[in-house]
Length: 214
Image 1 (cartoon, rainbow, N blue to C red):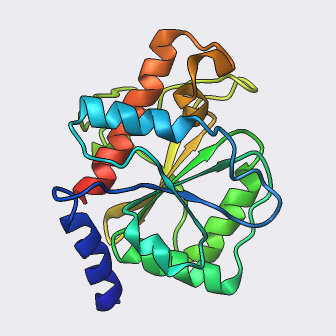
Image 2: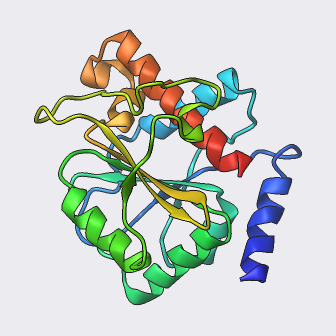
Image 3: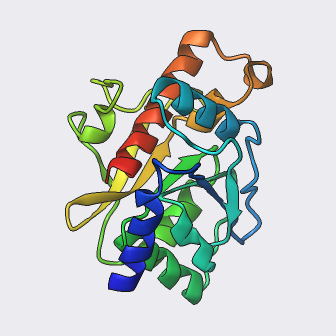
């Protein structure tokens, strides 16, 4: 575990010296892990401009079993359908998260029951909990005093920011009933109002700033 933590620390310590990428998780099970293709590039551009970050303009596609996952302090996961992790993938993801990694899961509507099962396999001893509105993830560069913003209204349920904490550190943030990624997409994709898109970008920036600050 110390070796894994050192590898991740080494990647983060190089942040000021070279471009650092964020990752997109390519999972099995049939779900569309590739949904929202313009979302991450737009979020990266926003973070580079508003947070003065030095993120590479392109993101990396990474599989949950790969050692390459340790190169990316922030991993994004999205989709509408099924999610399946093998035993090896489960262990690798757990090692990554325990070593300092951060996983953001954005339900693009329809993946919720599969995500919950997959997360229970990674951390059987923990429960997904709704984060209080005073949690630091809501108070990075931008303040969200009412918690996770609502971007798309699929079935009338309130948005929830759910998380898994390991040794007091938030290692998984699950944006449920929000659809942050849709708000990050090019404006003409969903025709969301500009103020709604701005909230999505600000919350995404908070997530990246939190992950890198850990």
